[in-house]
Image (cartoon, rainbow, N blue to C red; front, side):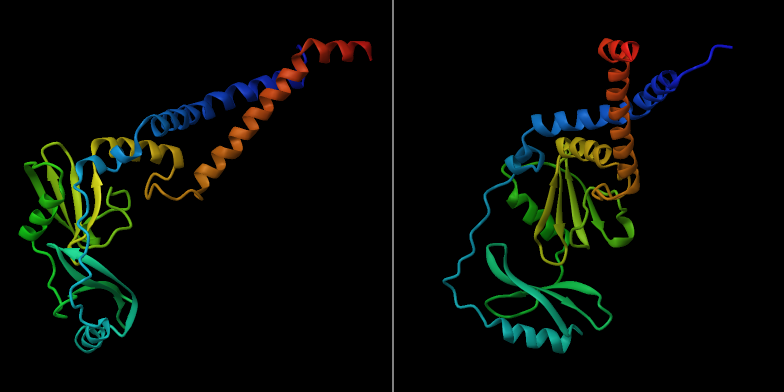
Amino acid sequence: MKRRNYKFYLRKSHRYLGVFIGIQFIFWTLGGLYFSWTDIDEIHGDHLRKEKVEINFERDFISPKVVLDEIKKTQNAPTINNMRVIEIYGSPFYEFAVEDKNKKGKLIVADAISGKIRQAISEEEAKQIVAESLAKPLDVKEIVYLTKENVGGHHEYREKPLPAWAITYENDLTVYLSAETGQIGAFRTTKWRIFDFLWMLHTMDYNGRDNLNNYVLRGFSILGIVTILSGFTLFFVSSKFFRRRKTNR
């Protein structure tokens, strides 16, 4: 029986590793090509939006402290994490991120002129706000109310305020709008969905899609380095120069 040396096992290991890792390398390369050859503004749907309306700060704003005191009394929200000024229907509003005693967070919106706390955005209001944000009119195909219960980890509306309205149009554009604040959270287009799928293959996070520290990605990265090193080793041990030196010795 012919005795097999280390070169045989090196070639065999490199061949099988190449096939196994090569499939993922193709996914990484396809993703890289798409990421580098597409306009990120189009992926984000910026070309479908109108320019944002600037908030008029010349009006007499009520002190945020007045609203905060009211929130603490009536909303069971002792902790105020942050505040910002937003615009709804061309009018300024205060947006407060608050937490109750159980550390459950929510957003509260109050009129910056009157101080009156605003109710959640209705379906009709959501349709109107989104329609006014579009660069051109589109026909609505579907409206869905999203909560934590019906949004999975792989949903295209991730790490955004919930509940939210998802309004889908005939061109497959979906606009997501916070039901608490009336602020648009995301535009999702077909190009974005292709991007998101390739990004999932790139990160190998098949659930949340954005975790770059998952063990599958780490494992394939290590195997990729091993495959490359085995290829370099095979090249040198098979080269004429290496064989000539070995023969001379």
